[in-house]
Image (cartoon, rainbow over all chains, first blue to last red; front, side, top):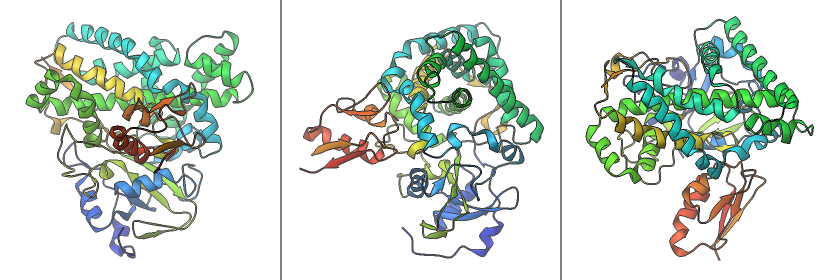
Length: 405
Length: 64
């Protein structure tokens, strides 16, 4: 822990750095600021100041102390990341609730995501990947790997998990694209929220009328029928599982593919020694950190990283910077696929830690080895520096990934 | 050493099961279950890692 320091006056003029120099690395300003202090002050798009926690220990402290650091967007100081983001503040979804409501909602679905339940879905995932790779092989390159594969693996998996028709995947993708477009108008963000909310209200009604043994059906049978959750709360839970399922894994599959294609020797070694994949994927999760930040509102005065945070301030935990913190990782900017004890925070920490993380790991472990085994001559058509990325969004990844083989 | 867990605090992340499935398990609701209350000397290091990296600090290692 550093000694007490007063915030640098010039820091007030630091605008949040969305621009990266390299698609793998956090914006370079972050490392410079972090060298000065693991907690510093920046200015958001709307001119409001907020704190950023760029150290691993500090980020974890914020994420674990949900009493002092609230996830409620209505709490004073909660940082807003864009006009579109601000438009969608009222949604009351699981990641933006505090206990006791949070715990009640999370516990209603937590049992669906145990390590055992996830492992039972491995064969099903292998089948989804096989079908998609067959379909990919029939296409004429160049092909957009995001659209044809990286988005499809989690989309198909999530539809099956929730028990909704695969035919609706495009509807979901369109809604989420509008919902998370940082440049979108308030009205289109609201409309996307409303369409998804209405969709899952219908799913809950259908399951009430006709019980089914899928996640939606079990949620309704075990938690709505007995009055523990309202129909609206159940619909919001399904809504948030959809968001979590569709967006994150897609970007990690795409970013990981770009990375591995640049490391043919490492990739060949992994394929020869497949028991190394889980550890290698942990390191890729740390190194690429596709989930870039989480936010909290400070509810009481607190010291963090030598800075004095006041009730009503906001904090961004900058996960990609924390995962490159030199105090916690040796040679943090190097990719070491055998890195031991990889205690990264890409899934967050504390009570809001990613519910689907065992699923994400399993899906990546199934996906990468099969993609590269099936297409050993896979290559990028466009250099990674020239790809278009989702600038300004919380989750980082390429919009398209043209590949050939 | 002895392992104790607090299921009131556990959020069912499965972190401990992923690291040491011979020592930890999850019940149907996803909450932590201790399979081996007194882990062996070989298991001690990974059990300590599981306690340190538990997202909600639900695992405590007590030295005998």
